[in-house]
Length: 128
Ligand SMILES: [Cu+2]
Image 1 (cartoon, helix red, strand yellow):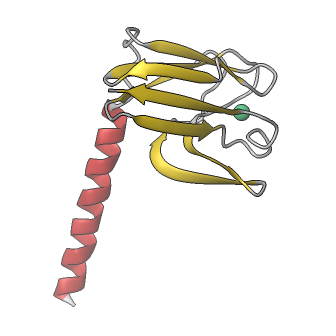
Image 2 (spheres, rainbow, N blue to C red):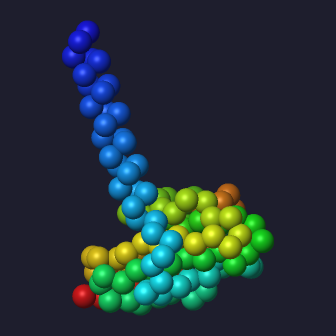
């Protein structure tokens, strides 16, 4: 029985640390990278952004409704997230940043039901 209590504690600690790390990835002051506007019209502008590794990309919600940005894509009409990055839901006027350290191509979507299927998708291409 004692062992289960311990496992529970360890699990809580891991979640806590992960949440803490997520928090530090939302520095509102970072303005040195590329800015992508979310909405209006169910779209990200620009839709495709190419940056050098280490660049901070900031999403700003310029719409009158909430949006977010989460890595993943639409497959067969369903949003499939890959977990690499995910912003909180952004209210109008809010922004969120993520620094892309690893080269690669990162498709992302807005997870509000229907938005990604409506074309609210984008892509970050990170060059070495
Ligand atoms: Cu949206």
